[in-house]
Length: 228
Image (cartoon, rainbow, N blue to C red; front, top):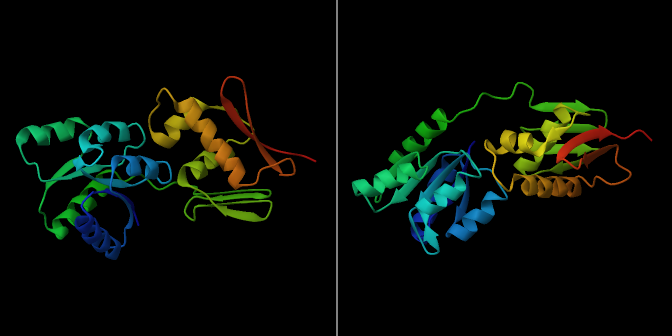
């Protein structure tokens, strides 16, 4: 089931929405501020974002513009502001839908389902890669290297999957970023460098591993099998 990032500073509304959505089978990640939401975006890739407009440390519409640099997941604004100018501003900032408080939870559910249907991507034809001593399973969210299985954050898993699908080939950080995030930004080189560093640490990919990820001076990455 889909992962939802719920950004809401009202603790009662957050609790009610979280309980309702989890009963519907969704995985809900909660943040009560812009800062916490930005942190969660580094840890998970949501399939949809429920975003309050008025937050204690910033405006949700301004945050949506930043969010769009990280993900193309649908954004539904939750707000008590229902003036036409506010609605228009919400769509122009990158939002996909707008729900005015108070709202019926079943209406919220229907709006979420509609956005997820519109944003649905075809399932990967090969969600699992099996190489000698390396197995990557996108559905399970795991990678097994040299007999040791690890659960990986989604972005790291997607990077590993991309590199393994073209093992031995050089892939630029631009291509990796665009494939994983759906866009390219100025700081993409550093983002990919950090993600690959974390990936190697999570897999304990050291001098004794049967695979290595190396980088070129031009910012290209390649996954190779090490022959001892």
